[in-house]
Length: 132
Image 1 (tube, rainbow, N blue to C red):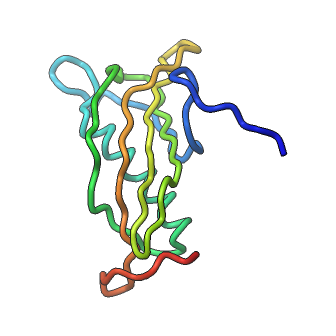
Image 2: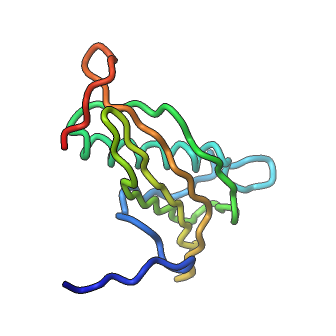
């Protein structure tokens, strides 16, 4: 069995789940992309990964501490990576990283990461077991 090398700070961890471009409408007064926009993209990516793993609807219930390391600028491509870290009876912890591929460059910088907790729910919004 081939052993995988652990990710480094120059290498994203997990699977590429969302890729989108940062646009002028998403900026603050300084011209940087709003942190809330980045967090929203991360939540969407986590939701995609959660739905795939839970085989149905999930809701976000918590986000561990998030520190922004680098700003995202207009024209950067935001790449969001996900990795399921833990599966409980009804909940999942998904590690999510956001990386910026810089506009007109091959440079790629880690922007932030966090662990999001999702709960699998039924059609009425009640918690349901995550399939094994």
